[in-house]
Length: 184
Image (cartoon, rainbow, N blue to C red; front, top):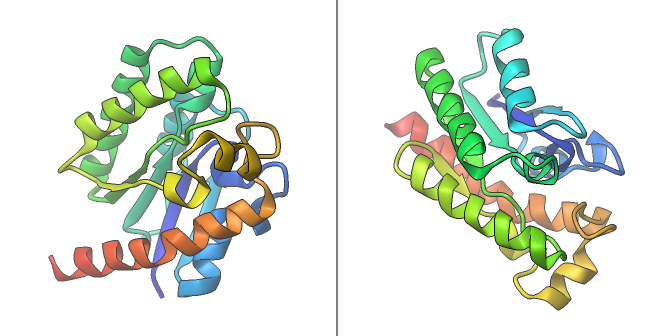
């Protein structure tokens, strides 16, 4: 069995429904990949990194998913500071010899927030491209404002059916990532 440690905020945890309804649970259901959900509501990237460094993963875990940044922006952290956190995640995974998947931040229904989220997405692609597998779940959520409005409970957190769609979209991509890593 393959295992993936999934670190992040409420968007990994599955808020407001809980981890059993998260997109990572749907991936696990469809692929039989054990998705270890370490998502914590409200965490900023530096909080997530602290948890990553603080607690040792089981020795059979060789793959890590990281999703963070929206809370940082909501807390007023600068993109430059969040970018440094993305670099720290890359360094930690390299040091521990973990294969890394970075999930790009999701676009919300809030225009002002979206400007910063789009900048962060570009920054994450720039920093992590070629060094980590980049996973963009936005197509499963919706690309246009109308689709995003229908996809979210509160403008940021997905509805349960959206989490399910995200997991269904992510499952073959994560499977391929793990398969390609094994062959490399």
